[in-house]
Image 1 (cartoon, rainbow, N blue to C red):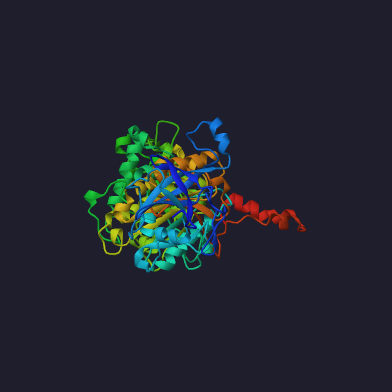
Image 2: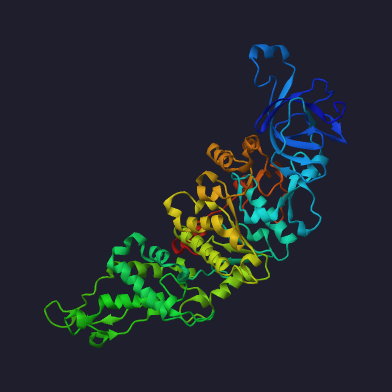
Length: 590
């Protein structure tokens, strides 16, 4: 077969999953034309195949040299014109069977090595005949304008994936390309996109977008969805380590009782014996503040604290809990006579912190969540689930651009845990769980899924999905420009990496260490990838590949400003132009 136009050379060394190939000196051209297409011989990142009988073993060129790896350099000088390839073996095709990853029968010395043509690659990647094949056309192979590269949707989603790339590498475009393909191909797909910067609404005109302050689809995340630890941290800055403090234990009792008092709900009655401080049941947090304030500031006609009750309060005027107006009392006497000051000061520090949080309008999406407000709510969590993941829309975008940065961790953690719980407890229901899987995509993941302790709530919730979610029909994609800052637990559970250009060495090292298949040669290409090109490795792709993803239109709102055009324009600025900016800074409200 040495006369075959695809003939490249022969094997001279076999070492585990790596073989060394001596390129034949008799090859007439370094760029042969095969079936009308020009191929480059022995280029790094290209594929070759070893033919032995009816077995074709495929490998990836990792390095090129003019000397063999195991020969003395002085001897090699006599044979400068020769070329040697180091090839990493990936998988094999036996007869007419489908390509399989892994090596069953290793090549031997002098086995022939051939160029891999487009026809060979088509055998490897396959071709989607119908939607039931579960293959997603992700883009074109970097070496061929005509060859589609397919991903296994099942493995892409339920084995989890990561889209990684530096700013300007085409990362957002890749996200849009993948999600649009899924939407277009699978008409009952369900996807939830966490969008911290509000970039993706423009790219998905038909998606349902929830945004804080939006009149049509306002984003509400009721505070009572939080478990007790989250609530205490959010409201008063307390941590679970404060369990020994009497005010912490007291607050737990107050919350528990408030929830037990509201066990008759729109979604169905709940046995109060099962209700705890962690149960996602609505209650009136303003009323709790009001009662705590009253306890601290009331005056009484009786000095004995054990006998001080509402019956002997020295009340002037009732307040208005919903408006955060406290009750008024007669000033306490400085002498040993009525009115007596309340001696119940246990909740002093919590009351002031709680009031400050409730007054902050930036958190209205939690404390004033429309029909989900409190025990008088006309809607319940089944309505929220229906809005987010149960409607006709295949993609729902939660635009978190107006969420204050300091609560982004809690917000993402709350959303994630709620969705996870719905899939876990509904795993056998007909319209959710395993019967209707869900994909969650986390954009800008490094900002709330980091290694440090400042992202504990979101990180723990998302880590749970990556470790256990697939069993309940829940898959996830993390999207980040800084993989080195991401949780190692999350990265360790990623089955497929879609890595665009990464220029930072620490980010490259993370991908290299975490990526399956040990494809260092492809990972080494990351700094030199073109915009829109990605190295894809892992379970969802038949063979690790360099892929060009198509440019999407409409695009996400993530492009750079037109700097030159802006800086050559003429401006006539006045102080008044900045008044609205300053007002927005002060109000923290768009």
